[in-house]
Image (cartoon, rainbow, N blue to C red; front, side, top):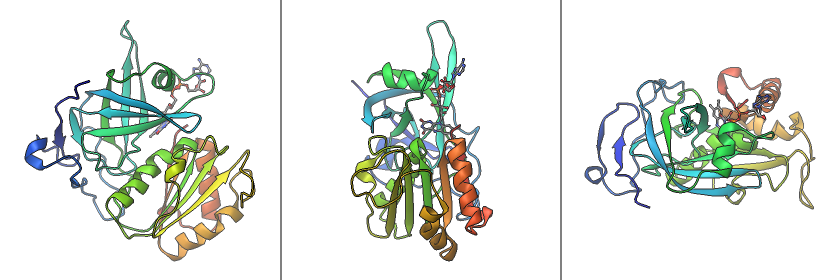
Length: 281
Ligand SMILES: Cc1cc2nc3c(=O)[nH]c(=O)nc-3n(C[C@H](O)[C@H](O)[C@H](O)COP(=O)(O)OP(=O)(O)OC[C@H]3O[C@@H](n4cnc5c(N)ncnc54)[C@H](O)[C@@H]3O)c2cc1C
C-alpha cells in the first residue's frame, strides 16, 4: 500500500510545511503551546479540518481491544491525552462519529494510533474497527481535540486508567519515555483480568516511574493486591505521593470508574484542582 504524502502541521498555530523541509521522520516535533505550564491548554477544536486517514494496520491489544494505526495526510502534533473524532460513512450516506484518544506519542510523525475496546452488545463504530477495518481503508478523522485532559510532560503526574481508559495515559507514558523526561510518573492501570489488560508489555516501570496493576475479576497466581474494585487502600501510596509531590492526576475510564476514582482521590485529600478526569461513557 502506498501511504499518502504527509504534510506536517503545528496543532497550535496551524502552520504547515512539507515533511522533507522539516527533517526526517522521528525527529521530535514541537508540541502545541499551553496557556500556562501544567494548566488548562487552549482547546484546539475548530482549528483542524476533517481529513481522510488511511488504515495502516489493525492489531490486537489484549483480549478485548484493537489498535488501529492510521496515516494522516496532514499530521498535527498532539499533546498526549488529546483525542480525535472518527467518522464512518455507510454506502447509503449514513454517518456515525465517535471520539477516540490517541495512544501514540506525539513523535510518531505522520501517524496516530487509536486503541478501541470491543463494546458488549455490539458497538456501531468500535464493531467496524474490530471486525471490518483493513489496511488500505480510509476513514475521516478530525483532530487533535481537547485541551484540558492533556499533559505536555512538564510536571509530576499520577495516571489512573480503567480498561481502555489507559489509552490517553499510554500516550503520556510513551511521550515521557520517547523524550527521556526525568519528571516523576506513577501509573495505576486497572483491568478486569490479565488478558484484558492493554499495553501489558509496556506497563513495567522504567527509571522515575512506579506502576501498579490492579485486577477487578481475576489475577495471576501470586498477585500481590486484592482482586476487586479500586479501593482507598490500594490507591493510598500513590495518592499520598501525589499530594506530597504536587502531582497532576489524570483519571480516565468509564463514567463509573472515573467517578469512583475521583471520589477516592478527593477523600484522600488530593485537591480537585489537581485532578483531571476523562469519561468514556
Ligand atoms: C473523549 C473520548 C475519548 C474516547 N476514547 C476512547 C478510546 O480511546 N478507546 C475506546 O475504546 N473508546 C473511547 N471512547 C468511547 C468511544 O467514543 C465510543 O463511545 C465507543 O467506542 C462506543 O462507540 P460505538 O459506536 O462502538 O458504540 P455505540 O453503537 O455507540 O453503542 C454504545 C453502547 O450502547 C449500546 N447500544 C447501542 N445501540 C443501542 C440500542 N438501540 N439500544 C440499547 N443499547 C444500545 C451498545 O450495546 C453499547 O453498549 C472515548 C470517548 C470520549 C468521549
